[in-house]
Length: 163
Image (cartoon, rainbow, N blue to C red; front, side, top):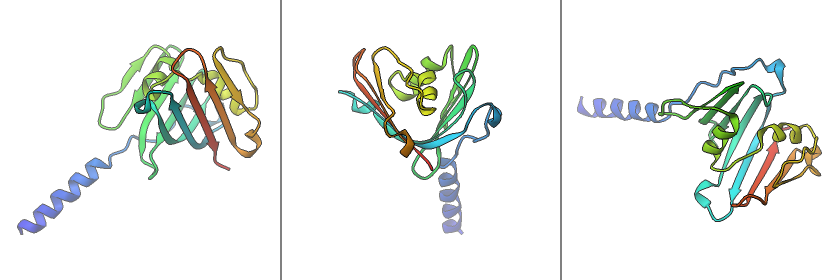
């Protein structure tokens, strides 16, 4: 009897540890293409801010949703934005509100990423961003690379799109 209760308690703890955020979009998929794949961000001299994750990107720079996923498909973070507000949700934490998508992405990723330009880059438009250099030469193969040289620290963003 005690072993059965201990086993049930372990199962309950494992299920709680696997809790995920809902994956329902806050934007209509028709308002922008849904993209998915893997992304990696390396920040020079700050390995704690470097990460790699699966992603699902919906919407547009004005309103959208970015879901970051672990290798097993669990949600690491859900970023949602619309004019005037941005919300970051991570499992087990209360939602955090930000004034802009840029502020929220910097908090979530550990480094500033030009989100509006990222949407353009994924469409094959090499929108210039001060301090950043995008390489779209392999976009036809589903690969994008962008590097930030200014301001420090330098950052390297790599995206591999699902086919």
